Image (cartoon, rainbow, N blue to C red):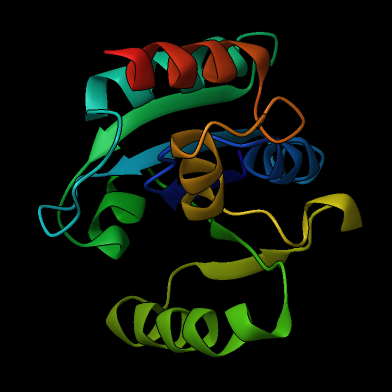
Length: 159
């Protein structure tokens, strides 16, 4: 079974993330979306909220799982018997960082490959930070996130 890990903070989960997942499930038997615990970030949604939002956003895909993880990604991938790590590349500016991470992961554990997937061009400018900022400033993000994430964003910002 070919298993891929799709790691990220997903704060919030966007249509760009969903597009990468839809591409990855065509290539792998199972895709595990892993929400990284990052104590250096101050997320808008806590990890359990993100877990719930992502699970609801991908519930129609039987070969997709959503989990939390902390620690080294390569160890998590080994534990899950993954054959690949999936990363999205929106623009050339993403490439240098992602290449460094892929090479470091290969150095730490060469048992799996990093697979770069490009989203649909309509999502190349999209990232979670921009979505959060637009939402905080009262802008409409309904074209950028799944409907339930949009609803959660509006509710979060009202509180």
